[in-house]
Length: 105
Image 1 (cartoon, one colour):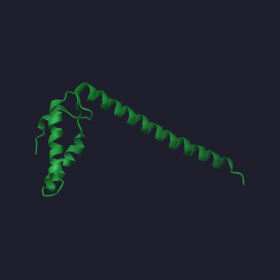
Image 2: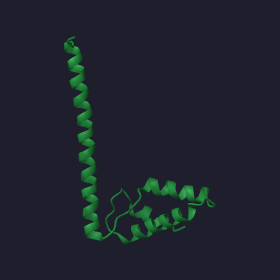
Image 3: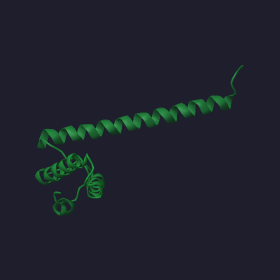
Image 4: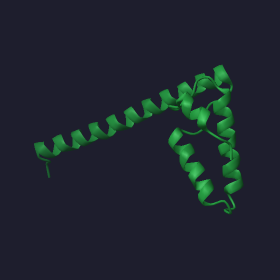
């Protein structure tokens, strides 16, 4: 039971695509982690949320003030706001005007 040439081509193509994607994702993740470590070494702390994530967290806190996790979420939100105000260089794409407009909850 021999496989046809087209079957071998498809198998090798799939392997190349899957391995290529995996290697790319690994390299990108390692570079991001290296950048985070450099920021930690320089500043002692980094921003923990992206602008979008922090916005979603704020919206969740406002929509669910009575939830059992609301206090912890509020603490994490406020902690991130304080950190953003203290650090000079952010890991995520924060604009200085965005940081200045943030208010603690």
